[in-house]
Amino acid sequence: MFQEDAGQRLDKYLQKYLKLAPKSFLYRMLRKKNIVLNGKKADGSEKLKQGDVIRLYLSDETLEKFREEDRSYPVWPDLEIVYEDRQVLMVNKPAGMLSQKAAPEDVSLNEYLVGYLLAGGQVTRESLAGFTPGVCNRLDRNTSGLVIGAKTLGAAQEIGRLLKERQAGKYYLALVKGTIRRGERIRGWLMKDRKKNQVTVSREPAEGGAPIETAYEPLASNGAMTLLKVELVTGKTHQIRSHLAGTGHPLAGDGKYGDATFNRYFRERYRLNSQFLHSWKIEFPAMDAPFDALSRRTVTAEPPELFRKILQAEGLEG
Image (cartoon, rainbow, N blue to C red; front, side):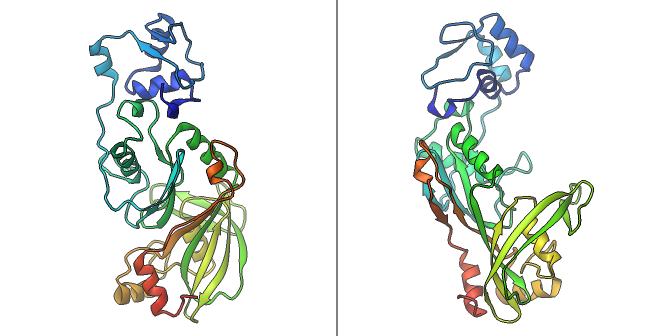
């Protein structure tokens, strides 16, 4: 039993280890004591602890039948890790990379994280059968910046709780059209069209809409555009992009919600092919062990070189 598997139910662990096996088969094997925990009969509801021993009295043919084919976890040499401890690591994701697979053939940050941990000996192929490390927060493919990766099940659960309860502060840098002179906290209702992978935002309550909240403050402006520090209070699909566009201040380079003329300027002058949106900073609250290394810590990710070049050229470095 590996440390990263501790805390999960036995039946959940078995479902991950034998991914292609029906649940009914697993529970039948438990009842017949073909699968035992620490030498004793188990029903699957037991919470696993480090040092537990699970034995499967199954034929090689059965194991091969129900085990998922081995996945490839490549090593990405330019993986920019900005923070790491025994529980989590944080990566400065480049624009253009998926946070998670959108199709079976995709290679995403998830796979690169596992590849990094395998190459460093922090996990093994055997340990991945119970828990596979992965990202806790997702960014759009063309948004750069901080992504949190959990190394253990406990970390995945704790970071997931912090994000769900909005206890971690998440801040972005965004370059938008027009002049914004003062900060504001805006609210609305977001509706998603899954077929088009596009959202719309209403200022009034809408049927099927999810309430959203976005706060921002201007950092610098040159009269034609403004650099914003944006706080993502809620975290919905395309929230920042669509919410700011709805206020008349679309993001530079945003082909889905942006302004065509504004985008053309950045594409032709700077060859900007993604939206100017960067997940810049995460502030963690007070946290107890084993997550105390993150307690009250602020982690930042440097914006891409092209973003820094644009800010300098447009007089927005301040």
